[in-house]
Image (cartoon, rainbow over all chains, first blue to last red; front, side):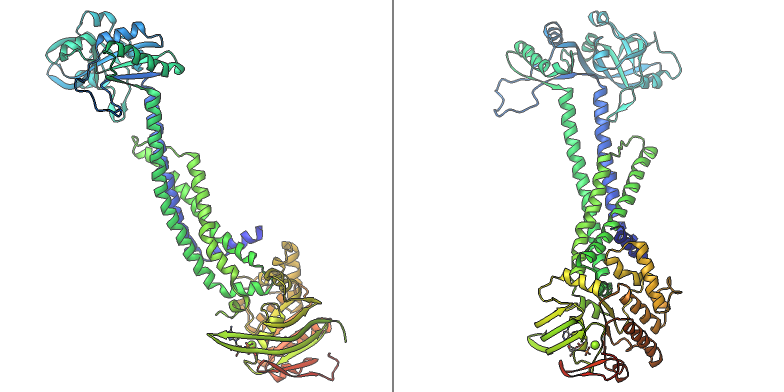
Length: 399
Length: 233
Ligand SMILES: Nc1ncnc2c1ncn2[C@@H]1O[C@H](COP(=O)(O)OP(=O)(O)O)[C@@H](O)[C@H]1O
Ligand SMILES: [Mg+2]
């Protein structure tokens, strides 16, 4: 066995350039599979991490029904709004909810001195901090009283602080928010960019003040946190029940759980990863055809040798093994080099492009390697069979 | 008469070229004893090589019976035939048929490799065989570096390395000048003296004279089968 492997290695080494070029096809195939799957897996991991970071056991309630159910909507269906009272009602009556955080979102022109900046402004309550997992770092956050008394106080993100105040201490300073004076009471912790969106480029103000500012009584969305992971689904049902009762028994809102969102995105990205992996896999097949081609040439060239080997006692199976090992070694070698270069590029990407998420997963490495070996066996089988079946007398006569 | 190793009775073989059937061997009857030195003689195209391939289990006849070492060969599988070739037959060809990319030693080791003999023993046996033909000093050379006579000696070493029951040589001196050819024939003489069984195919009278028995073949038929009066039988 070992001898046959050695023999196959010998003939591969004898034709170094040709063997290498043949390997190249498999190499490129494997490298692209590894690379693309790494990108897909990296993205999936990134999405999971970011999604997990926005809170725990989270449910998001948005106005309007996003899922279409069989029937056409009734004529009178004007999508009703989610109100602050809805929020309060949930907070008081839902057993399965730890906390509820209503949000009103708008854009305000924030002005300090002669600098101004259009910033996404969130009207929130104090519970926002824990539910959304975004905390104040310096100063204080918006309190329940601030909300009740429509106080004109603001907490700003790091980017807003840097753009408007540079090195100045913003605490206690007055800014104009779309023409209304607000006092800055806190600065948020640094969070960075998530899904291409700068979490630090936000201004937080009391919910009721935001309603005044944007002249609306609608909640953009309501975040709710379930007591624990097990109650998330029950919490969803409870929210639906409570809100339906308040909305003329109409489900004119949607409740999405963090978990379902995560699993949906996970599924999409997984399928996407498999698809791009499979597309890259096609190039592996092309590499396999290259191997078959070269092996056929090699069998042709070595017809005489095959005849000699048979004359001195080689079994058909010996000849078969010899060529099969040769093609499998070529493809496996190509596979190993491909894995190394694919993984190498994957690890190098974050060095040059830190925003691109990559993750070299073990399963893709194992899969790509097994696939490359399988390609060698599969595409080597036909030439090897051809060699094994040669008639010894004909083969000996071949010049 | 000693034991027979080869017994062929009314053997026929023909090739098909297009729809035409070309008979190559017709009604061959032949027996070879152990420790015989037989020469099969005949002009080019008379069917000598074809006969030798059949004797050597490389090819099959169309009809007739062939017993090798007491066993009928007709019903055997390709795999069985390969086993006989590997263990009991040693071939020497006109064009040497060494594998050019392998060293002399590796070439001679090869039959042992297919017999499943482990590496170290293989190498020892091969070196032994090479020293019997006087080439123990060229083990690592490639065939291309050798003269024709040396190549044929390597081929003989490869043929005897498994200690086969019979050595089949097809025009072993055909590609050599008469002086080197003579050296090769001397080796055969020696193998024969040591108890080997040899069948040499040739069209040269000079070579035919060495045999103890001369079988003449013409157009696929044996036309004479003469025992020489010398000691060789
Ligand atoms: N594969 C083949 N197909 C057709 N004809 C063949 C084949 N092999 C040999 N022959 C023919 O058979 C005859 C005998 O060939 P061969 O046994 O090689 O003769 P020799 O060795 O005596 O010169 C020749 O006429 C040759 O042309
Ligand atoms: Mg011939």
